[in-house]
Length: 311
Image (cartoon, rainbow, N blue to C red; front, side, top):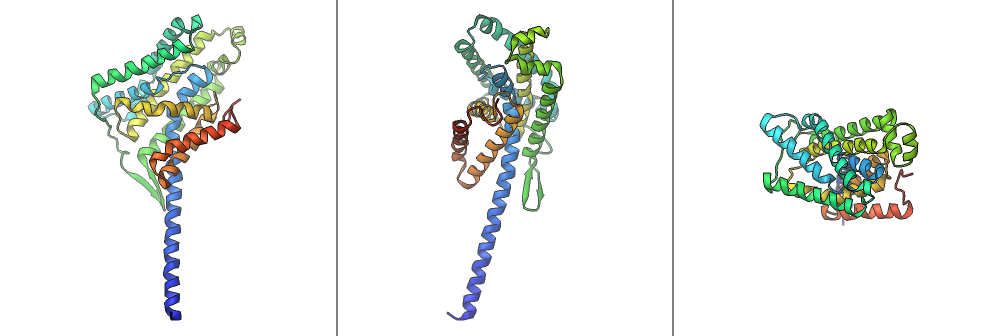
């Protein structure tokens, strides 16, 4: 082969390799961004479970059902009045807090006060999950519902990096929710009492605080977070009543992965799971994402059973 042809062929191969490397880098950086944004959303979905399960030791498997309820309330108000879903979720926080406080009072009187919260309490929350889902199906059917907002659709592009606003806005809102809760738990008397209620209830009584009242407040806050998580979910994707089932295992996995009772651990765990799922979906296919994410969880627990930031 003539020397010129060899050089031309080498040059073309070098260009192809450069394009391949550039394409791989683009995929890599955008998969990382997508994983971080997804992890931010997972933070909002999981942070309530981190309070109820991680701090109060209440296995509320109905938590995702309340998230879907929040999604449908955001849908109703958005479609009829055009209000932004995130604004709706903030307005709905007191109502969801009262709902959670009422549910805890029933749970306490029926199960916890009698020492029957382990199996019967779990059945209670399973029943809430079933009733909520069936009620939503009877009212709205099984069609997918979605909301409208100015940031659903557009993306910001910085160089090779894409930031879809329908993922970026929920991520920012979820991190704001985390900061607000972390400040509340660390800077207020009630917040510190919530952190202490699972550790030493006698000491809490000596501080003139009722453990039952503190648990009721904490569980109310846990359910209140589902109003925000539900609004963020329906911004990211259309929803139907059974969508919440997809998140039951994931939220408890992230909670355990990050460390029980640790909100910063929940954020880190959610981000890592989001990144792992994004990389797996990008390079190997979306069907592998949940399996790989749970595999990472199992490996972490094998070497650190307390989770990343567990006590």
